[in-house]
Length: 480
Ligand code: BG6
Image (cartoon, rainbow, N blue to C red; front, side, top):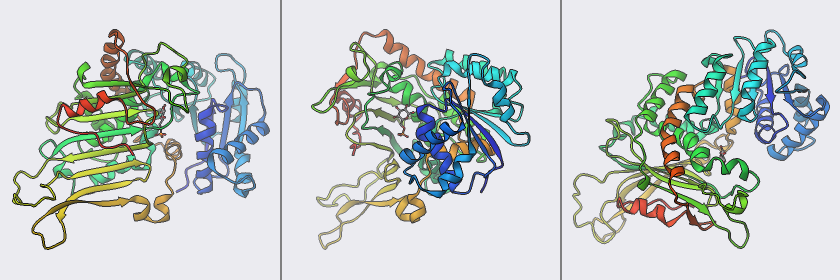
């Protein structure tokens, strides 16, 4: 469905995110017929260049990151939508020019793809120069603060110029098709919800494993670490979608209210229930201390933790979270391990093993899909022998070619901004609640003198993380 005509201004348009994700994403939506030919996409950054130079840079990015052929006629149709205004975020240069380009009657959206330290300068200039009005939308990227205090300050600052309904805080995980699917699976089927509680679920594992290290972005990453970079935002969102109560409607505030309740119900994590790791060098690549350009760094490139949610639904069911760089495989998944049946009628089930707990694995990436492990009888005359088999569904297989063609998270989210739909964006109170929970974890670590556990590149993380599970008589799923 095409969106209404819009002017989208991308601050930081010469940056990495704009070129890797935002511009190629907009191109794909254009090709899909969702963006009208009249729309304007205006790059704004410090670099002094004109429309043509920006278009040619954008074309290169679309070819490189969008896998598009240089001679694709759609590219030639798309480029005229792009324009560029050199702008001084902290000064006066460029703002008049920008204002003159904005059209009356079109939706105005401003994407802050810049360091958070510039959010205030840009917001202020948009408001004071009369470029943004009460209908305008602003999009802000993570990191949204680095603790509760700074997030509050950011929210307060933005609130001087914009109301909450105008502010779109991006967590790109919410734009991933399979992450949205978590809600569809839970709330569009009757099958799972009756079992979705501590009575039937033994524990939940959420894994976001990456193979990349932090080389090239070490100076940013070293000030964040896995907790700020992944847990406070992406992992927290996954946790919320798995744990929340059914919203009364698929509506921005209804969904976000329920997520907020989960965050507020999180118990503090004690030092004994969290493991931090740092990847080591191997023959092919440097270790974290080199990549981060900080030989003394205590920042974690891996974290595993046991999280408890203090409410009726989840009393007694732990959620184990882990995420890290330079692990064995790139894989993100949520695994829900159910409890064993209360009574086995198959006491003499033979040597194939006693009943095993059902497990539902939702694979977020790659090979997006679901896998439900169920027990069946092993074929053969040897008596009632049980075996666990997967009911496996890869969305691409189930849905055909359309299922394989998953739009990138940014495509979806930018179109939602234009449509004015905030469901997949974080509300200010949600971000603050997430920091309120992560702050004590980070502070306790800062105060302790301990160092992260070393782990080998290409492994599944530090040994210590295995013990976190073993202590509870549970095991991590293999990362592969
Ligand atoms: C980003 C983090 O927000 O998410 C990165 O800053 C991380 O460190 C990335 O690599 C992971 O996103 P995806 O979409 O590749 O899973």
